[in-house]
Every structure is written in structure tokens, then in C-alpha cells.
Length: 435
Ligand code: XUL
Ligand code: CO
Image (cartoon, rainbow, N blue to C red; front, top):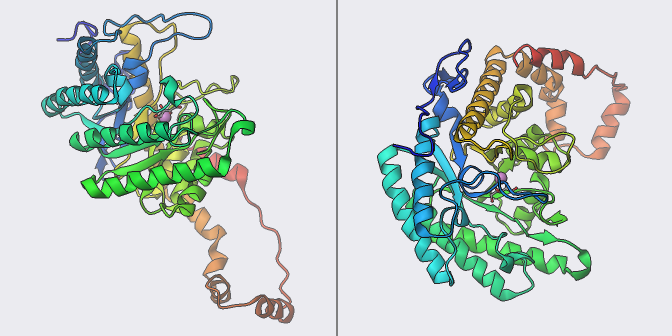
């Protein structure tokens, strides 16, 4: 029985007309959409850090939450694990995600930190077996401790590189032991504050070396999950190297890792890079590196990474459309990298937040599925590019024509292309029928 979530029952699906704030109105885990249960389509995960590990202090005042497990001992960490798993069951999250630093207090040495991590992993193992909750991904926090202030793999000090490599190894071991579906690398401080103290080329090579070792180790230990990089353009550093999907793809190509590594795309990070979330998803799919998503939203006025829970269906629907067009989630899923606001201090607020997020994603997903099932949008796109099915068009595309060949044909056939409408407003109206 949960002390912290006392009086809050397992959240049930009650349908769109329910006025119960502790029920799902759109997320029915057993509903079949496009031939699959919604739980298997969306693969929701709770982020340990935002919901259980981080407090609510800001630059102007201290923490407002005071969770009973806040503290530095292994007993605190165990209580946190108890309540986290109670929570996963309350909201019916099939997965969770964590950093080492979220789940265990740091030890005085590397070895002691790893020992503590493994102790918590023993507890996780039991709880996962008892509840059926699975690990979507594990990761190492290589950005909070001051030793990482100048970067982890990109640090000018090789001892920090070594410490980071050792920490990643320990976290990959634990992720494998817990049957994690993925392992994530978010380059928290892999970037720079000022170019004046930074040897950019050298730091990129260091980062490439680390990632190559991660891929080698994945194969060596037989970890069959996916290695994911999570792009972000800035924050905490002024310029993060894994800026966006396009940058990450270039980086992977340069170091020959594009077959072994995919991306975990976060809504708010796409926004900070001045992209839409669906742009990042569609680009990753186009490059064959789409992996997973971190679901949240940023405040459109504030300009920083506010990590709010999603609550806008049209904003999320097209992202799921591109995910579905790319084949849906394989090892990836929908991780709520989202946190409740500083005034949302009650246990119930965590539950409301996840209900809202899960319902928003479920509606968006069903809208995306309906767009696909209806087919008129896909038909429009097919027709827009239909000219490319022609014999000469195909020959140009396949490299069977030179510039001279084409120039000759344009001249001989007096080719004179006429502009055709891009139909943006028509398409916006079409999509609005579903969202
Ligand atoms: C930070 C962020 C991280 C990663 C995991 O903005 O998104 O929580 O998801 O390290
Ligand atoms: Co994230």
C-alpha cells in the first residue's frame, strides 16, 4: 500500500464523457488501433528524474515539494523506488526511464557509486518482475556533478573522459540486466560556453570516440536494445554539439555510426532548435535513424526548456503520423520527460499530469491513425509527386541522364512547366477534420 499516494486508486479508462479527474477519457490501453493495443502503440514511460528525483527549487526560491524520500541515504532511495513503482501501477505506465543519479545517492568513489546502482537495480529487478513494468531506457547522468562542468566525453581533462566511459559502462550493464529496450546518451554538457576556451574539432573527435566505444560495448555484451542520442541545441551549454537531428546525423556519418545509433527526439528540444517536433521526427525517419520520443511541451512565450506535460492534440498528432509512417515504435516509446509546475505540490498533481499527458497522446495518436486510415492525405501527397513515376523522370533520378541529356530533351520537347498550387490551406483543413 502506498503512503504517499494514499487514497488514489489505479486510474481507469471511463470514456470521453467521464467527469472524473482521476480517470482516462481517451487512453484505453486495450483499444485496438491499426491492429495493435494502444499500450503497445504508445509505449508510455514515466521519467524517474522529473517525477521522483528532482525538486522544485528555482533561481528565486527553494524546493516546494518535500517528498518523503528526499535525502541522501540508500533508505531514501529504496522508499523512492517503492513509491515510484506504486505510481507506475496507479497510472498504468508500462515503462519507466532513469539516470543513475536519479535512483541512487552518489558514493564517495566510482566503485561505491556503481555498487549502490547495482543494489537499486536488484530492487528494480524484483519490482519489475512483480508488476510487469519494463525499462524503456537507462542512461548516465554525466552533467550534474561538478566534475562534468566542462563536459563528459568532450572534457579537456582525459580523466573526466575516463570517468565518463566507466560510468557509461556501469549504466549499460545495469540497463542490459534490466532488459532495457534502449540506452540513451544525452550530451548534457557536451558543448561549450565560449569558443575562446574550446578546441571544437578535438572535442568532436573525443565524442566520436566515446560513442564508438559505446557501440563496441553494446555488441560485446550482446545488448540488443537501441543506442539513442538525444539532440538538444542549447541549455545547459550555450551551444550543444548534438544540436538537432540533422547535426546528429552528420556526426554519426562522420564517425561511421549511422547504422548503430538512432535518435530520441524531445518536443521541447526541437522547439529550442526552432524546428517543429514533427520536422525532427520526419527528418529522423527520412535518415533511417528514428528511435524514440521524449514527450513534453515548452511554453511558447518563455524561450527555455520548461518540460511541461503535453496538452495540445494538434501539436502532437502529426508527429505520431510520421512515427506511424516510419513503422511505429520498435524499441522506442513515449517517455514523459515532463515535470509538474512548482505550485503542483500534491501527490495527486503527479497523477493528473500523467493522465492529461497520456490522454493527449492517445487522442493525437488516434487522430494520426485516422488520417492514415482515411487515406486522402496520403493520396494528395502521392498525386503531388506522381510526375516522378514517369519514364524520363525515373531515368533522371536513377542517374541514367546527364545534364546535357536533360537539356537536349527540354529543348526538343519545349518543356515549359506551369506552377501548381501547394494547397496548404486545403491540407490544413483536411488535417483539422481529424484532430
Ligand atoms: C534534458 C533531457 C534529459 C534527457 C536524459 O533536457 O531531456 O532529461 O532526456 O538525460
Ligand atoms: Co529528454
